[in-house]
Length: 295
Length: 295
View 1 (cartoon, rainbow over the protein chains, first blue to last red):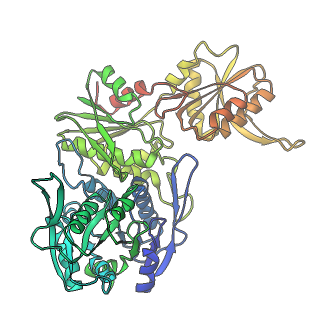
View 2: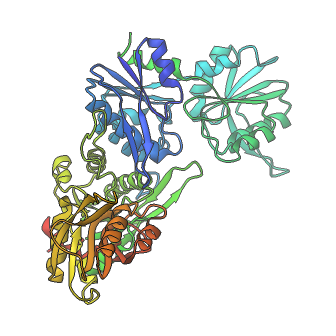
View 3: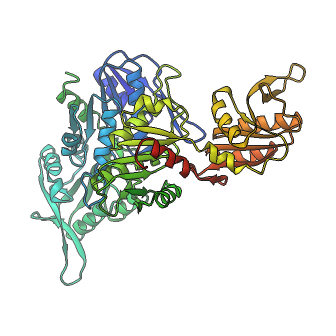
């Protein structure tokens, strides 16, 4: 088995190759003066191939690069090609919210399959059912939440609780809480009748004297985390931490989050960022086992 | 019939709609803070739809945008969708020149078909056989060379000749020459045995006292045109003009071309540029007739 690293593998390819004792192959890549991408696989690959390539910003460029690599890998003799896509861009546009919109995640997934993937592993995709809906090839959704939770073992002082930013994200918080052996809840926004101020506090639990860990799939602008942190600290929380799988962190997000009193933010390495300290590789290995590509 | 304009239609969509008396629909488009593209078709489209969308730089972004628009148009009820792609990026990577390379044009064409195109019109694609090779849907290659040649009618003083930059581009020069009623030839590079200087001159014809029109598919760096112009002027040509379908014109190309003595450069509107003065719309109409979408 070969593991193919691309310029958007973020080290996950090499860690994976080492862990499963596969040969690592590094794709050559350059950009032509007119802006077109060139890729080349430097050797024959007459075996099963795992391509690790994330669709973080610049998403559109990384998307086409993935398709080119899949085609090149097929041309280099690969028998089966597993596309491991740590961050799957456009996953939030998973239905036509308004008439006339595309189902962008469907477009992305269908193209990946058409380009030659024979299986796909996503990491904490926004809606895992998108994979069932748009792929005919085997697929799995890797969940690195246990690894994110383990990062906080021994770091959370006193009573701790894990919070999901909304009811839809509760499963992720539950998983983290079970690793840490603490309670969990989801956050609800409420407007104070007197001050008009919006607060984001746990649905049922109290934050007083607690250490709060907010766990989400994506941190993009940081607005949700910042509001939840402010609310928790105003209501007596001892300290606030945040963890996410994908640290998209658009311009200014980290300063917004730290300014709101968050002590530390941690993410996985699916998207490059200053806080991407936990590798998603172990979750990818679990997912590859799930679809039978490694034992 | 509807004609759908996108941010990469360059006016061709509106000109086409007007010419064939179809309704023009303009796609809404924006970019999210994290860099993802959003598109929306603002109305139902229960008819045949022609989408005009060029893949000029930024190619990768325009590529994904085309796929999203095709999916949105399908979702808006379109029965048949003709993708008119005035500039088809990655068309030059039409085979595995070296082992381990992708066939990029195949990746692009297969994705367009998978996203919902039921027919495709390209304009002066690098190798028209790519369309036969990678598409199962009806397709045609629009040739705007007559329109480019017409631009020069009455402008070329004295005896004129049309030159192709290489033997492979001879058909394009022949077509332009027949419209202008002049001779044509292709350019060969020769190294002067005494000075060592490389010259690019017609294979058989003489340029002395002639007005030269070089006709190519793409001008990218401008190096080919600049060398041919210098050689022609050094060998007694009266004036040199250049025409191309796709004016990619990477940084500095136009100055390089004018510095080499070219009097005027003209291109079609498949790629936005300061010299894209001739519309490819008439060639697109001929191609749509060829595949039976208009009468």
